[in-house]
Length: 112
Length: 110
Image (cartoon, rainbow over all chains, first blue to last red; front, top):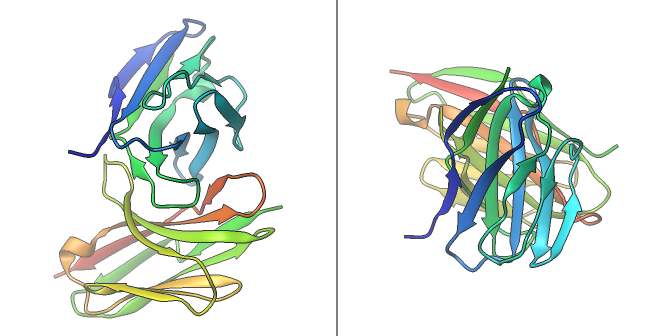
């Protein structure tokens, strides 16, 4: 089954404790991206990757890091989480940058 | 500044009452406009892609249209199962970024 898998689904952490949210896709897609979704603000792109070893900033990259060492994986790293990073996060992949995107189930992160 | 604005923010319809959702955009070059449906607690699910003004696409009770400045999602004779948040997103010519609108929350009552 074609899918994008994120882990964990829920995470509560403390300020400053490094964390990683994993994202994996099994469709051999080239384009992958991370979004955060906040009430009233919609989905905002954090980082995207056009292909392996090619990543670039979206609209809200501050406080986040990503890497794309393999085509299928695109982890999101928060080196020092802060409460304003409490949000619902989605990973997505698509065959090309401007084609239909498949989204993961979401990761609800709470930073206290 | 590149912007995608959706209206209304929320819409309540009776079952069978047709209506339209609007997505207007001000971006520097359009390489695609997307409509997604999102159910509570889930990731967005793809509905349509439109690439050029005048293009239309249909799927069951939904029809999406595109002009040079906006897109409409027409819902004909909606059913309660059409209740969801509908998201519009624009892929810009420059920057390889996808910009989403804030969404329209649709509730269809039987």
